[in-house]
Amino acid sequence: MKAIITDLDRTLLHTDKTISSYSIEILNRCREAGIRIMAATARPFRSIQEYLEQISFDAVTTLNGAVVVLPDNIYTSGIAKESGEKIIAGLLAFPDVLISMETSSGFYANREITEWQPIVYEHFPKLPENIDIYKILASSDREELYQQAADVLTDDVYYTIATNELVQIMGVDATKWNGIKKMLSYYGIAPEAAVYFGDDYDDIEPIAKCGIGVAVSNAIPEVLKVADCVTESNDLDGVANYIERYVLEC
Image (cartoon, rainbow, N blue to C red; front, side, top):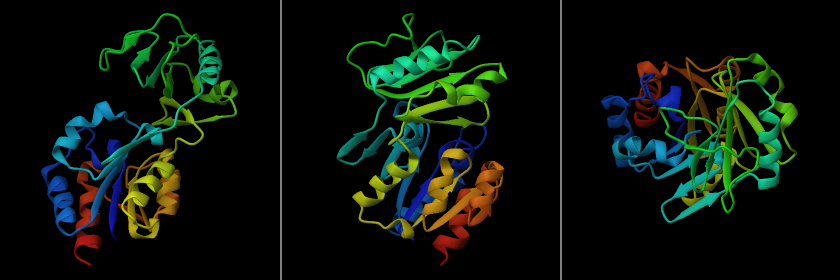
């Protein structure tokens, strides 16, 4: 194997959002062995800085593939403004919906989110001028949002539901797999020479298409079903355990 690619939340990261010293050690050993280390996450680039300080990833795919960061280039794939306004208008019809969006000009939301400190924007569904929209997110205490989210989408986007509590809407080209292909191509590595680790819906395609697809044991059933192997849970350092046993010792 020439590349290790891992999801972050609920995969490499413990539930408390930390990376163990053991996992850091194993990934550093991979680098010393000439294996490229990459991440593919739903998070925006701004929210993974602490992990980049601990692990020098060779490339990262963020926002489910909407922004791919390579050593000397950044690829973006967004949502058209007209589509964004139609989608947000539809989302606003759901009671008590919390809407936010990742953009080229920062993180916007229709109300305050203490953890993320967004730009509170009061003019939805009209969108700010001169920004690129990378991702629209929606959540609610009501099940209707998750059951009917597909009804508000335009033809040029798709959506996933993360951990059954967050609707994520991206442009059709903004997928983890497309981001992974860009990362691997940059280093001249074939997908067959990569191991991918994941746990959620947006990890199904890369798990199925990389040379080896590994699910952590806490993954959703759909991921467990498609994976080539299942390793220990994120809190038991399943990613590092698998790498040590089956990559570094081969």
